[in-house]
Length: 306
Ligand SMILES: [Zn+2]
Image (cartoon, rainbow, N blue to C red; front, side, top):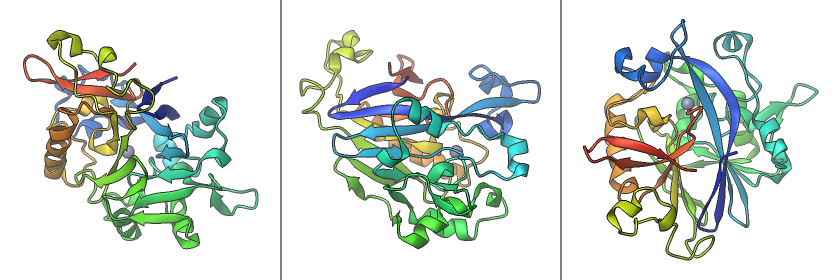
């Protein structure tokens, strides 16, 4: 169980399971001799990919960031990806029922990020999985999803969002909005044009002594200085899908705008490094979150948050 407190917020990771992805596609132009030092591929060159959702309890609301792959894949897609469909089970095991979720946020609308937004009821009708929730997703993603390119049209399943937009249960975001106090979205272009990261700022007054958790911060001891811990976490989604993708140039082959991925990562690090953000990895099957820092040689390293 991955759980920690961020100021007065409680953060937990819930997985929808794992699925196989082609290692070459996952690491883009990075040669296998390099990525295979970080991730092991099977004989077909597939690597195991996670589906991490983030549950935030603010004290007032229960917020679910991303809803995994869901259970509505076509037979053809199940051949490629399987269909683990573990999210509701894993939430339930922790005592979280679908009715408990107040807010759902999708970073973008590819099928592996919003799959549990909806389910088919016993009559085959598409209904919201989280009946009480207000849903949020980037408007640019939704516009694009209506007429995707041939390259990524396979990644969209309209049943995951169109019924929610039509019923008014999903609000479309421009980027920059604060959804509830402390939880906001920001556009990071690269993987897609309008993908949004979810930035979470726990009130430092709660959960800690108000000075952050500096004593528990790895590396802080070395300098004797208080790390500038600001109780900020970021669900950076497919801009950095795993802890093996933290290097500026290690983008995915799936990225529609690879040069923008590099610029967006630089923009992310310009704040995340000095302010010591907790980075949440959407597709890492082992390390769902970490503090990214530079080692003595200047290389970016991910220190898993425990
Ligand atoms: Zn993804």
